[in-house]
Picture 1 (cartoon, rainbow, N blue to C red):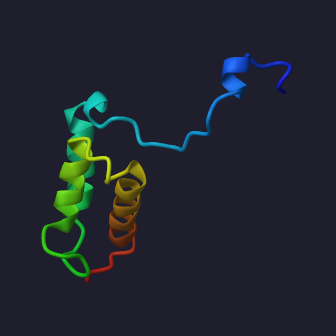
Picture 2 (picture 1 turned 180 degrees about the vertical axis):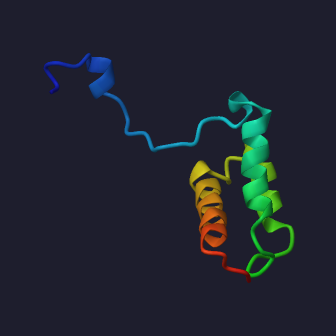
Length: 86
């Protein structure tokens, strides 16, 4: 495939998957993510930690990555889907 692709596509550092910018996806999309994260039960998280993580992500805090947000949102949806109350 190297001979068929443009060199700039092949000869570059590996990149991970990221969630698209929430700000670039519109307000309703951001509200949906926040709603999912807000639905997470307080246990087993420290008080305010999920909201703090979400806020950091939106503000560009480099210690919060898209994988953390995706993991929390996936957990929230899984708990809802299986009607698990904690």
